[in-house]
Image 1: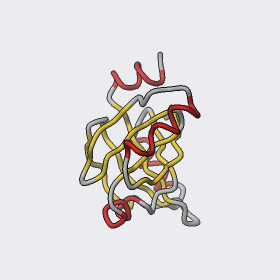
Image 2 (image 1 turned 30 degrees about the vertical axis):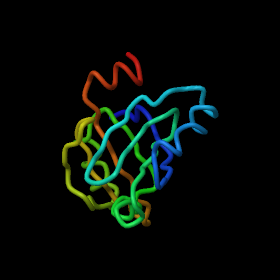
Image 3 (image 1 turned 45 degrees about the vertical axis):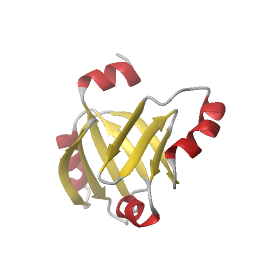
Image 4 (image 1 turned 120 degrees about the vertical axis):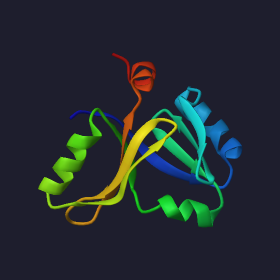
Length: 125
């Protein structure tokens, strides 16, 4: 299993209001932009902006980062072997498969296995 990309999570009330400064800071356009269960998401540079009302955003606030990996099944096994637990079981989104895991000691992370076309377009290879 390889970590392909890690995103710092940024919380916003409105995605269109948040993106101009990030475009200026990163010099990039969003690699991804999509809606999911009441929030809008945009990946730009090394940031994942999660926008929506505070109540809806709170459902996702427990994870400190979003980590794109080559094999989600291997992550699940490593989390279990390391004394962690899966807090949100594997599910699907517009980008591929994901799960949330709490590591031993408390940190929680969203792990995502992107569809191959996204890996090629955003990560390369």
